[in-house]
Image (cartoon, rainbow, N blue to C red; front, top):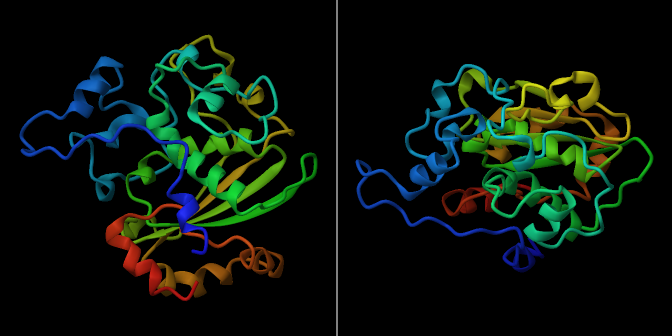
Length: 259
C-alpha cells in the first residue's frame, strides 16, 4: 500500500460511462458495443447490464472468442518482444499493431493493470528463463466471465509462468477452487486465421497462465491458498503482495486482511 499514490496515476485508462439513472434505459455502453458488433457476444457479454449474472454461468473458462476481425484484436503472438516499459495505450496498441479505434482496451485493462503494478513493484523476471510468478488478485467480479483476456500476460511476460489466485466474494460457490489453464490467446472471428491452430498459438518463448479461483474474503482464504503452494511460492509472496483489482466497496475489506 506504500505505492497506492502511484497506482492512482495508472496510465492505461479510458473514459468512464456515467451510471444510468434508469436501468430500463439502454446505456451508452450497450450502444457502443452494438456499434462494434460485439454486444452480448463472447468475452463482451458482461460489459453491460444486459449480460448474464456471474452466478448463473456454469463454466467460467468457456468463452475464448474476441468476436471481431483479426486486425482489431490480439489473437496471436506479438511480432516483436514487448518494449520496456509500455507507458500508455498508444504504446500498447503500437506494439500489438492494433488501430486506436479498436475497443479491446475495455477488456484488456485487467491484464494491463497487472502489468503496470508489476512494473511499479520492480519485480524482476528472466527474459529467457522459466520463472514462475505468483500473484494474488483481490475482488474479481465481471472479469470472472472474461478470464481468457489474461492470456495477454503471456505476451507481456514471455518465458514466465504466471500463477494467479483470484479471491473474492463474487466467485460462485460452485466455482470455488476451480483451476483454469490458459495457453493460447482468444480467437478472432476469422475462420482462416492461424490463431485457431493450437500449434500456432502456443510457443515456448511465451508464458503460460494458471488461474485458481477462490470464493470469500482474502484473509479468510489465505490459509487455504498457501496450503496448495510450495515453499518457493511463499518466498515470492513476500515480494509480490498488492490488491490488483478492488473497488471502493471492497477497499475496507482488503485493509482488514493480514496481508
